[in-house]
Amino acid sequence: MNAAPRKELTLLDSVCLIVGIIVGVGIYQMAPDIAKGSSGGVGLLVLWLVGGLLSLCGALGYAELATAYPQEGGDYAYLTRAYGRWAGFLFGWIQLAIVRPGDIAVTAFAFATYARAVYDPLEGGPFPHGQRVYACLAVILLTAVNVAGVRQGKWTQNLLTIAKVLGLAAIVGVAAFAPQGTAAPRIAERLPISLALLFVLFTFGGWNEMAYVAAEVVNPGRNIVRALVLGTASVTALYLLVNSAFLYALGYEGLAASKAVATDTMAVVFPATAPAIISALICVSALGATNGLIFTGARISYAMGADHAIFHKLGRWNAKTGTPVHALLLQGAISIALIVLLGSFLNAILYTAAPVYLFYLATTAAVVVLRRRDALTPRPYRMWGYPITTAIFGLTCAFLAYSAVRYKPLVALTALGILLAGVPLYAISNLLRRKPVPEVPDGSESIGAHRN
Image (cartoon, rainbow, N blue to C red):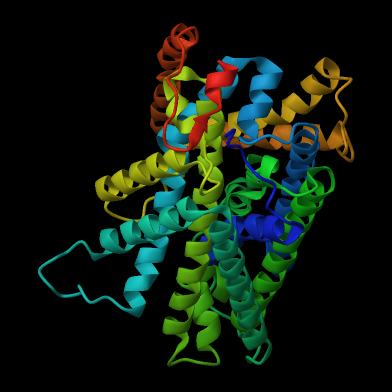
């Protein structure tokens, strides 16, 4: 039986996937720092709006690529087609080795931090690693859900996304009944607007995840574009509403000086229960982001395994569960290893920020390359505003990559070393291409056996 991805993701599923991944914990943690880089309340909202518009420019480019080439793997497939197998391999390699497991570990740590605030039976006991336990359990549970089947994974995502959106709506509603924020002490620390914009775009990260599951979307020619635009626009509107609520309840100076902005906003009306309410809300938000990253991340590894012999076991789609089981299990194992090694909530994405944005730049440029190279390929959707929107997002990616290198050059060199480690692996994979891939006896079939 030829096991392959099935079209099971509706427009609702797709929008929930995008919103659920974008709206993680960034809105709670970075809102005060972003405020420090703006000129005032109006400037703050403009900054968030600009972040949404820039993300939409990127989403439109991905929409054209995803509808023209509705395959699993997203950037991996587009980079391979535009520049060659080596480009897709290096993207898949860095995603598999550090970026995706690192992102999963970060959101799992965020869940663990706030879950312990709600209930921690290990607190004060002889075992000092409660945060790691919570984080690992989150990854294990959500990986198991996604291994069980696409329906289980997508409905878990839908429910978590709806819950987190309702939670953010509740914050907005509570703020409406709060007395308007009064003057607070002037902000002692200001941040450059370029860094604030970097933080804004980080909180919008995840809109491109739709491309990784394009082969599973019902009516991809229409629904991929709709999901990308609706998802990005919905998050932009949500972020503007939430920041307006923060500004109303705390005032601009109070927002910028806050250490726990959502808790401080809720505490204006519910001072006794605010910490527990917000902790539970952030737990749900972090779990939604973690589940979405697990769901889409395994599709990148699956696509790479289907094309490259060295990772051919990852390119098996299980016929019984309808999921890339091997890719999910390896991704979960690496994520758990990072959780154990890091031991705390760390922003692992800093280690790969420069190469990640460079790959975004390469994918955006692929819109131009593939329009010329594959001129005869049907394009159900053509990027609005091309080539201006393409240039805007491409320049933004180049700026963010440069900023990451300038901010932490040693970290960027470490990331470059991880990326370059994929070069000899690619050479080995090419040597193995001529060797036959063994038959798979467990009901799943290696797609790479046919492509290699």
